[in-house]
Length: 104
Length: 232
Image (cartoon, rainbow over all chains, first blue to last red):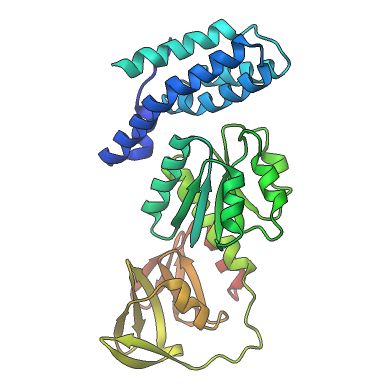
């Protein structure tokens, strides 16, 4: 089962430690805010808005090298536009994995 | 080249900004999380290039392009492959980058951009250009015979103009000198090198031999170079 990791971020930043630090700082700052917004819109059944929130979260999922997670998020984003919430729990699992990883 | 970045995601903006910084040829003037703010900025500022996210709340990247009368060159950035076809329906769009953007892909994009700009540049067919160029060397204006230049190399904020007689280190850019040179005689083979066609000895793979110097050719500039050569 895939786990979040820094492989892709390291590829992007190369040897630039300051860049890596800034990138991780923004991810740690923005991720909880984006999840909060998604949860709010989803619980209010504003699925179009929630789909946009998933779209934005996809970039961070992808940065943390979760390829399968990214594919699932893309499917969820498209299904949400149609009001289909079947992938919700799978998506929450991805968010939870990232949340735990960022706590470390 | 002056650019702005438009993306509602701060991580995406940071990555593009850092890649631009490393490129040394793109200066980021501003970054915006909203396309509407960027439009306001463009009403009073001119830029050569926009890195534009497609998917933004309220006002998408495509809305942005349609709003501008004379849009600059645009490189679209997105997490989706689905918009690629639509993206290239806009004349100003020169590339389509999938996020997160790797260094390698960003560099390829810059090479593409340079080729497009070179191809779109009008060929100075009938324009009578001077046979000489004056450059500032150690507070002296020095006259250089243009045909004697065989290679110009970019070195940070300076360019090294190599002529048959001597070399001149001048505080300038390749772009500035390129505009002063006859395009039928000179060609930018790489973001750091302009060569004199008449001085080519041979071309092998991705390099060209100019006198005794091996000069790299960008992948994206090679086809244009081959088109301009008179070969069997």
